[in-house]
Image 1 (cartoon, helix red, strand yellow):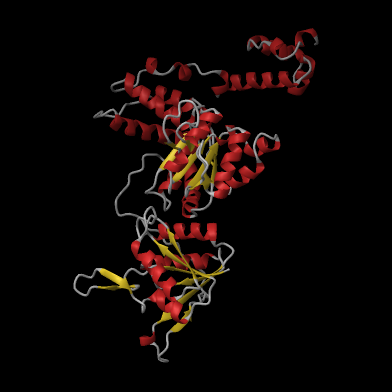
Image 2: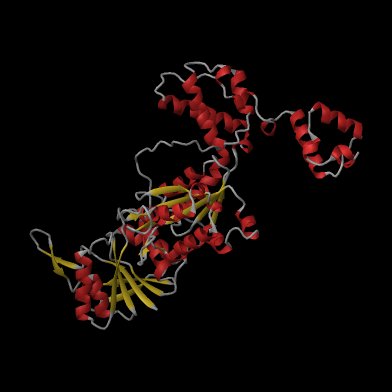
Length: 491
């Protein structure tokens, strides 16, 4: 299908009262009318409005009405894009990208370049240059500026420079937003990728990482750097609910849909309209919920429990998991089609134990200062060298969240310098799996080999030692071999 797309030109598509400047009617010499008068050879014309669409825009609807009157055999449609800031290029581009991807991806698209703000025109250029759609850009030279006394249609071809180069348009507010999270060196490449993902509004993202590693913050970072930043960011932990509760929370329900449904309830997917939904622990949802979410992503529609009419939604989905989703797909516990829909882009956050002592020290200092402000202390807590070493040596299975909670704990029980007896027991006496000393490492390795071997004799061969040495270490480390195999009966 051959489709013409343009913005409504509020300044030039309408006539105005010369004194009050109020719009009084449609100007048949305006840009959209002129295109129809002289150059229209398309299957349809789609006129874009930056308004929300929750109520009709009287101007764009008036323009469509007048065009339909004069050209009754032409298909003329309007689309509302809900753009809060008409000079925000990333926001405009992402909204138009999304519309083209959803409804016009297969079309031959003619972009009428001139109507709209300068930011809208730059967005057209960026969309055309991306090569994602079959687009051509056209400009009209009005009759009064033409040497031929006729309006001219200009095909705006882009001539590439022979000098290699590229540019990214990025608009940042002049207001200084202080970061509430420390992005250490190992995270900077991940957050740079997240910023690129933020600009690609229609792609989903799957974030891998252990519990407490910062998946929600990364998802929020994508949201805050996207064109949806003024809309809601809603996070939900999928593993915390049964199917029935999760479906109700996400999709909502109508009055009387089930026992206790005393009123209509809007779900989180609907609450997030225009914004971003973060689905944490997506790997734990049931096949039933997988099917429902797949439909949401594919169709951009939701159905409340007990309702019969679907609703269109416009939102971005970011999912996260601490599981190996491809392996769960292989095992038949997760749908491959949903996985591919979720994992258009992927990011992986490393656990805190893999981020090195320097970064752990940076995080400790960061949280000591940030929690000082939270607890309204005039001075920061001080850590003695022995206390700091206990904290640095601890592996933090709960990752950054556990470290943050630990510093809050220390502020509760200390006024100035942190005392040893205020440290949690898990730091002073960590379980074997969270110790770093050589003896513990040897003990854990012996246990691992004993679990694999069929006998102590076989285990000693695998370990490269005589059986007497193995038995001595088993006694020294108080390893209970009977929990692995009946090893005592077979030497």
